[in-house]
Image (cartoon, rainbow, N blue to C red; front, side, top):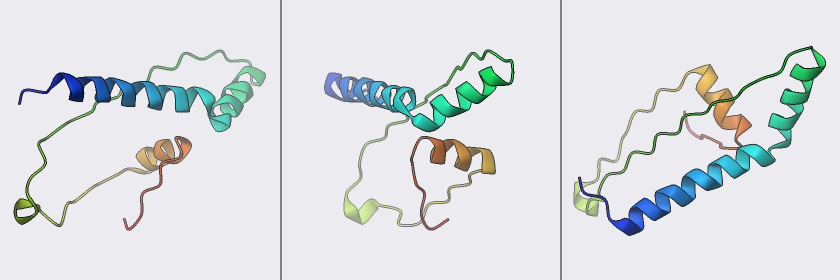
Length: 87
């Protein structure tokens, strides 16, 4: 699928916004500080994959989708202040 220049710019802005949110997170800062107090220095590498697909008309939408998340996934999302309802 060909992605428009506008979509590429928006995806880049999304990545920047997520990165900045993690950097400003007090929970992340607190955890890093606790690691330092425990005698460790850390290096954090996060990988963000953003998948895009064209929106379908309402007649073509699949109303049910399965999302399987591990406990680690949920902890990561909570740490980023992302809430998942109705799991």
